Amino acid sequence: QVQLVESGGGLVQPGGSLRLSCAASGSTLRFFVMGWYRQAPGKERELVAAITSAGSTSYADFVKGRFTISRDNAKNTVFLQMNSLKTEDTAVYYCKAGTVMEYWGRGTLVTVSS
Image (cartoon, rainbow, N blue to C red):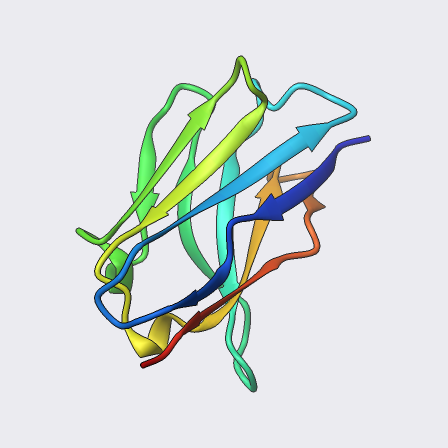
């Protein structure tokens, strides 16, 4: 069983940066495909970025060039560096481990507002 806890969300002005963390317990994340998702009010949950066990990354078009996903297997943690934030990035951000058997965190709220 994998438990995931996201942190690092908060209120930031447009153009600012935040770094989200997803810490795991109960199992190593080393062999999991990891993903960051987000869900804005009234919208469907959507994939933001993913990283394979080998470190290959992929991004949604709306964050390319602004967000970076990374992982530290020694710390059993996955990160999402978010730069040049826009108001439309406001959402609850969730971490997911796995593709067949999926494990989700409870999310961290990111609010981008002036």
